[in-house]
Structure formats: structure tokens, C-alpha cells
Image (tube, rainbow, N blue to C red; front, top):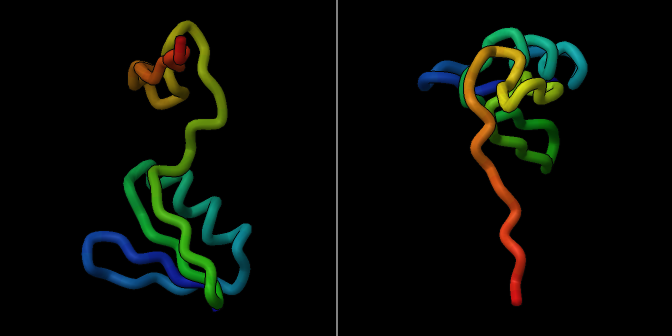
Length: 67
């Protein structure tokens, strides 16, 4: 059983694929738990186009070089 915790509620899914798809459509921070694995984050950003995520938010991360 896969669970997702979101806003103090727990949702159950049969597969990790189902849980990930639900989390992507939700577009908010969640915690996915499966056996001893825990994945936390905001899912759904499959790519960046024109400096923006698919949901319209601006992509701001920049790699810094060490000298």
C-alpha cells in the first residue's frame, strides 16, 4: 500500500504510479510513503519552457560554480 500525506490527511493508493499521478495533478507539496521509502516534494514539473514550469511558475534555480 502506498500512502500520500497532504494537509494532515492520508490518502491510499495501490501502486506508486497511481500515487505519483495523483500528486502531479494536485501540484502541491506532499509526502509519499512506500515501505521504507519516503519521497517529499511538489510533483508535476516535467519540464521547463521559456523559464517557466508547466504550471506557470517561474524557474529560479541557478547552478553556482565554485572557483
